[in-house]
Amino acid sequence: MIADDKELKVTLERIAQFQAQLAHLRQVESNPANYHSAASGLLSEIDRMQLEVREYLSTHPTEVETVA
Image (tube, rainbow, N blue to C red; front, side):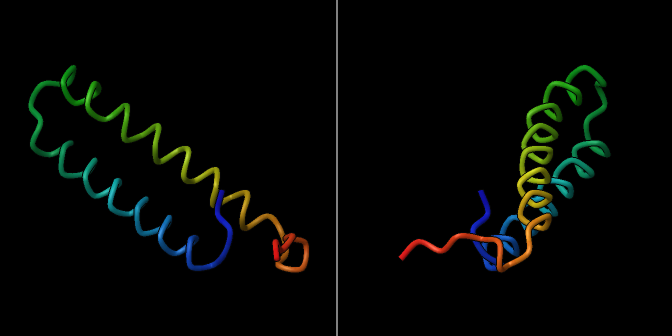
């Protein structure tokens, strides 16, 4: 779970890196079955991270509990 804006930034950067990896793989992998096999894990991770981003952005900063 994303706890603050710094973690949000890191997660967005990771999503961009994974997307770039997928775009590159799509260009260099000539076998569709191999591409789908390799891409499925990356796509699942992107989906998971995007859900975390969505959950974080759906709350207002005043709604987040702070642990002291």
